[in-house]
Image 1 (cartoon, rainbow, N blue to C red):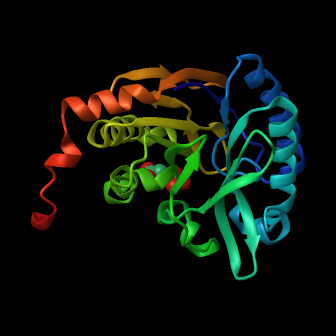
Image 2: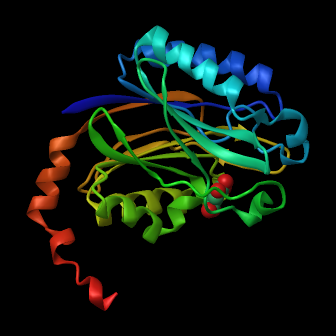
Image 3: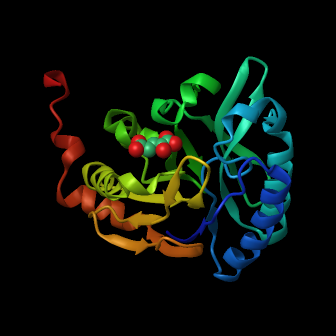
Length: 260
Ligand SMILES: O=C(O)CCC(=O)C(=O)O
């Protein structure tokens, strides 16, 4: 099975959900034109990192974001790895990834597990408790948010349970963009799977973001890579290649788990 992916590598207006819904709709139209089956958005695309105003701008139980993404998914018959949004939950705000199928149904939610202290996430957000894995069109996949990619053991868990594609949504800053590339490539090589990672561009009052949305194949080859400006980055993922690479170097069979 092959699937065409389009990643919306966009700028985000700081703390202005209304504006971001409008801009996302426009960008979405461009992504659809590529003929993609699956479309990705970046992390916190409704609010950006305006964490001090979350009580005003976070989306209550993500209801508005889910409704917005569901409409787009249905209208254009695409799957959405709908980035993450600031979700106002009963016990605080979470940074929540939303996955919507072609019928507009929310099929998976994952709130960021590893909070990034360098950007004050621990002061304003609650960590999630969800699993990263889900099934998409009958295939085992997983989704992560930004800082999560620094935790190989978290992503390994998904690979061991069979994930063939790992989706990442991010607001990764430019000064560490070399880490971004190296970490994503490493996660793809060690887990022998596709890594499909959508980053934002532009800046907020504290950070400049690096773009370079990336698709890495199970052999570690970079098959698509964005620049540092707004663009739609596309690639095709071939699930059979995952089986082929896992067959050639049977890392999962060769693990000696009792020694780890
Ligand atoms: O790990 C990093 O360097 C960046 C992480 C990050 O920006 C985030 O999780 O939002």
